[in-house]
Amino acid sequence: MKFYNSIGPNPQVVRMFAVERGVELDSTEIDLMSGENRQGPYLEKNPAGQLPCLQLDSGDHIAEVTAICEYLDETNPGDSLIGATAEEKANTRMWTRRVDLNICEPLANGFRFSEGIDLFKDRMVVRPEAADGLKAIAQDRLNWLDKQIEGRDFIAGDKLSMADVLLFCFLAFGSSVGQPLNPDNKNVSAWFERMQARPSASA
Image (tube, rainbow, N blue to C red; front, side):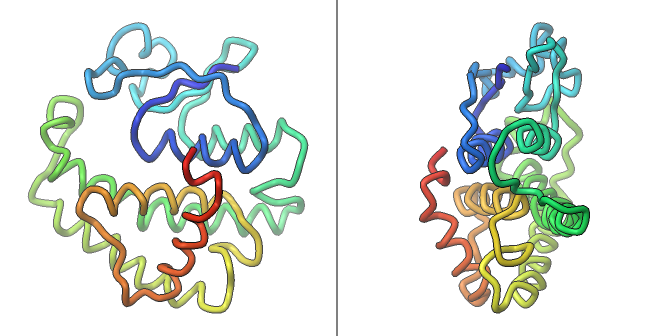
């Protein structure tokens, strides 16, 4: 396998997930800042032009972080971060989808449409008028999540899952680009500190 890596929260999700699963990635760096990911050689691997991307031994390519993480989870020995039973898998995927659609996506687009607009304006449709609203949506959903995780150690229950890795990487990114955690969300803040203390957080 070959992992096409870059800066940003999405590649970090896969790197952190791989460390937690004990998977070593053979990585090749793609220069996102210069737009290498939007040029011919990389587009042949991932026509969406996004990072990261995983090249399989077969020569096929998988993009989208949740798909890559699920592939790594299912093809390597060890304790799954998605679940061992149909019920566990459904629960993990439910929480992963909740944090992805309701928090990570509006947080990321809030950045792309404001602080990151110079980088993204020639790569995608940007709507600067939507930035504040998207950031507010992410914060509102974090307020909701804070109540949901009271009394438990991880997002989806009592053990680490893909939902935790995904959310942590995006909240760490958000904190670095003007979308800090609300300290009033005590449960999310305590969870974030526990995640930040994991060795995989520096992947």
